[in-house]
Image (cartoon, rainbow, N blue to C red):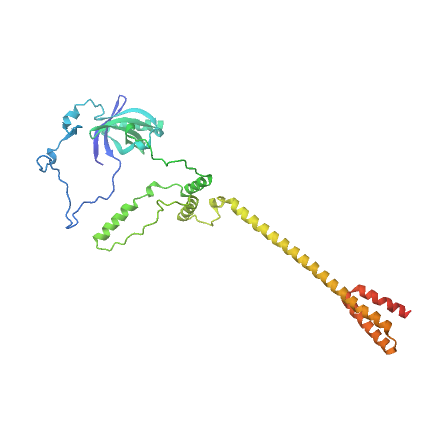
Length: 374
């Protein structure tokens, strides 16, 4: 890798010659501006405002614009004469725990390479000291015409340096938080925790830029003359008032399906979301069933009793209506023929009464038979 800066690390009285190498690279796809009418490329040319002529790079310097618009020229020689001890040195000023560095300060990242064989021993010493201390080094250095702040840490067997923004370059987050008091329920937090557990961890090496790949495919398709089909746009729900609980539940289920962990809807974490509703539903159903059974039993019992009473009353009335004509006809009969007819009628009525009224009618009929035989 090509170095972008050569200097040394100042570690107390120890000086470590190093080369600065970019640790990152930009894979963004860059576009050119063209003239839509004919496809010609649009270029920017540096033109002097006074004579309106194009100026080459060797003729261009730098200046500071004063408040009244006056240009104050500043040359590289002027800057080189400044008393800047970090012009060619990464000066370590402190060693601190890594959690004391605010991630908002993180800027560009670099690898520090030992410059030459003599630098190997002090380089290794600093690297191992950082490893054993579990700390990072805070340093100052100058790059591209300005002094900067950096953080040195160990990555594998290499010392890496992260450029840091100065503390006064970090803006306070005023007016960024939501207005008003927002209350979050425990049930919502529980579902958020379940979603976090379901998503789990990820192998950072497996992440890639899907948009860049889509742009590359688009460019390849248009270059080969293929028809490009518009992609289906998904509804992100932006600006809509949503049911947060339902959205979290659906997110948990979708995450489980994407990881091949989807099961029954009542299994896993989701079974504990609304336990009271499920239990009360079963209890009310059981109570409803018991009440229906009790009402049916009571209705059946009342119906049976009513039917028995009506049957007994009807049998008694029938027995009375039949026994009264029998005794009257016996007293008024004077002839033998009428007596015989009355006896037959009495026997017939007695038989009918015995079959309809049961044991009580049988006892009443049996007593005249005993007196006759006697």
